[in-house]
Image (cartoon, rainbow, N blue to C red):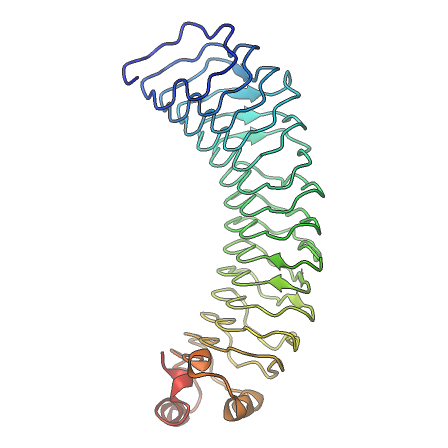
Length: 360
């Protein structure tokens, strides 16, 4: 419907799945009928669509996944106050980057994934979230969101939930039942208030890959047993204090890569750590770690391009001499570390029996 501009009325409609999907020429929207129950993709990609006043969500609406997906022309406020039965709200307003505001959402929602993803200009008066399990990307790239909303204890997955919320200043605790919080607070540039126990602590294991990457985090937090801490603080320039890595953590590849860490020996690494490859890559540290975890399996590119590294500690030299790591897992450990104090030693090691440690 590339030429349809106006909809006169939607009276008595109950099922409107995909009704106006990709009708890119529609310019105005009448009030939504209270009879509406299912509206998946109803106005998906209607980029010219706008609504005058406050858009009220019908009281009987239950299924609304992708209802207004990428309706970039919508500049109204949205009111959920009449509805207490909405269930599927996946990506309901994803990409609606000009919507003004949203009020409290129904507690009946079972699928909130990407519901507000990309609502750049929206403000929120939501104080409570529904007790569901997957909150992935729910508020991703909501630039004006300044305060994180408490995550229900029912949550299992919160990947990228608040990622890209540029004005978010404080983090909320991630419930202990969560097993995946990948990139949850990544790119939250203003993030400064983070409690020590923000991460989940459970026996199931937690994937916290890039949980705080490129964020404004400055404080030390606890990384608990069985947490996958790959690149957790990647690009965190304001982070100067090392995390409290508790015994039982095995994977910390790239943990501080490109961060503000300058002292790698501030805190001892636990013996349970196996994968510490790229751990301090691209940082301004001046010496290597002086304690190598007993379980260490890889130091590949651990100090990659650490341009201010001048000292290989005696402990690390001893580790190098006795290490049984494969060529791959020791390769490039000191690649690009041209500031090592003794140039002759660097040259000899780079071209001698330790060549693998310096080359890629």
